[in-house]
Figure 1: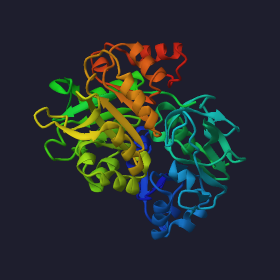
Figure 2: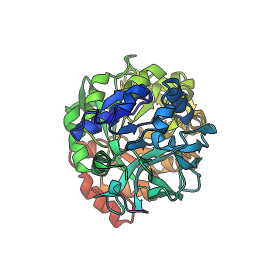
Figure 3: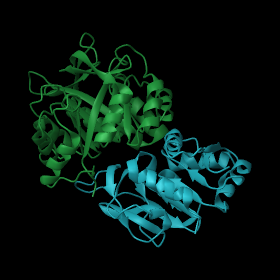
Figure 4: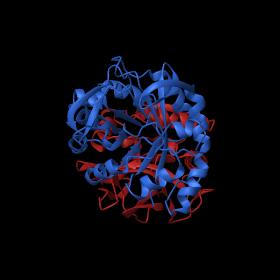
Length: 199
Length: 257
């Protein structure tokens, strides 16, 4: 199986699969650890609430399988947030693959939450995942929580404060924005992930 | 920096995109997929599809075209029309829409907003508000505006409703200023400013765009996060790349086309 899309029971799975189809990639929806184990790489999509998403992964007994997945893994939006230790959204414990905590975005005059719309990416580190994504490229975000900028941050974005837009630690990576809805920039990121060796 | 968004609005009736003037007298503009692809290519930042007859007819949106649009375009889109329950919304979101917008059904039963926010998160939940100024000078909401024979004026003040929907879990508000809709004389800056003062979530201005300067005005004077328009885009009177160039000249951040 070339690519598994983990069926976390959330609403953007269809959109993610259609975006992959547009790139000529046939994805397989997986709902069990056994299925996931056969995948060359995996995507963890997500929208909605962190607590519900983790509950679903636990129910499917996928938590350990994702934690120990040895090949490239990529989280999208809430799926990226779940890679972290903990989310301030309901104090939910995440997968713990990246050692940091997801925080609520701070409102301030002119800075509205949810952060909704196209924002610019600022490159923080070199990575094969950023190939052909230029400094200042724009992507579509819609979220109320975000991970701080850290050593795992490949690209940041700013809404009031800077936060992680693309992250990576070892074979695990993710994007806070929605590549499936970020036009050419999003397609490029998905393409980069499909070619990424996890190094 | 976050860009201001330009959102073509596609009113859908019987599987086609239509446009009326002041919410009446609809003419067919074209097929849904054809217009969706055209706006994607022109650099639209997002699309909104309103199934304008779903609510007055008491039915939900046909999810077939939602799925076709989701396969076709790589920018976000929102679907509105007759979404009365979490199950209705789930069908639309799982068909590939990024957000659902509720209007008349939220007025019938405001708890719907809480339920949608609980089930899908506030970022999926848009509340559309159709608003018109009454003779006493107050803006009040209208219901079932998709069909003039069924449109109802409510006693609910627009500004009160703006506050309530946010408390209930609206992640974005679309304010349709009915007094300026379709007549291309500019957005209702006065009303939008009053709503902006009470609106902490993203605010989408709707109704009245005629020339590029109207968009400049709605971003500079009313601080809208996004501007929605239909007829000026459908007719070709304003091309989105040209409009973005004008906004850039005014120092307004937009997505590069």
